[in-house]
Length: 142
Image (cartoon, rainbow, N blue to C red; front, side, top):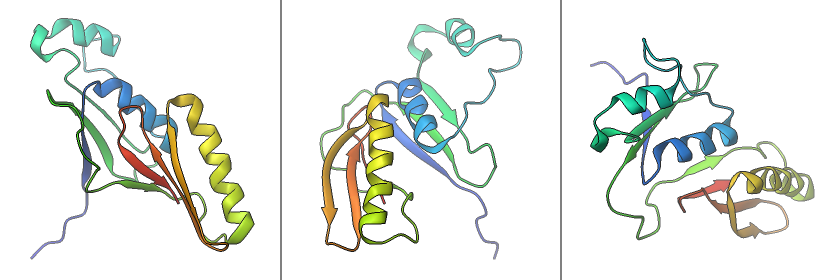
């Protein structure tokens, strides 16, 4: 029996490219080059039938370590809390005020990109900041 070596995380969303570009900023990911024969993704998009334009986008970790992220347009909006979410690990190995400062700095970096701070969870030692991305998907700065 073989084990799975790679996986991708898929987001349902209304605006795939917008959400993908947000996550590129969060994680330092990059968008792939446009398909062969196209100078830009916009040129590729314009070549597609109207119903398929802007229907998906993807990005990946330039180091090849993290999973590929795939964003697909769906007709329905987000209605309830995510059952699965990403935790952006910026405070690994830190505790107390030092950890909180690292999390707060990352939160401040992401807000101008469209992130929304939801709440801080802090017990004096461990901390986490609950956030939302540009379409309201929950994630944590951990």
